[in-house]
Image: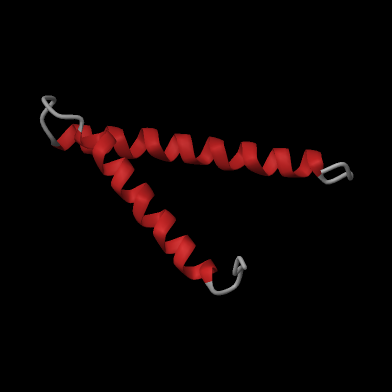
Length: 68
């Protein structure tokens, strides 16, 4: 990362983090509106959706980027 693209990578990571945290906040708020307050269903839903998205992205890129 010693080349000139370091700042570009940092900006992409920051943008992804901002979008992800905003989506997490919105989804958790929506789920909390429709469920009881006794269990953190919003957090649970966000974690399940995140895991599913991770598996989807991993599955789609597994064949393209093989580690040997």
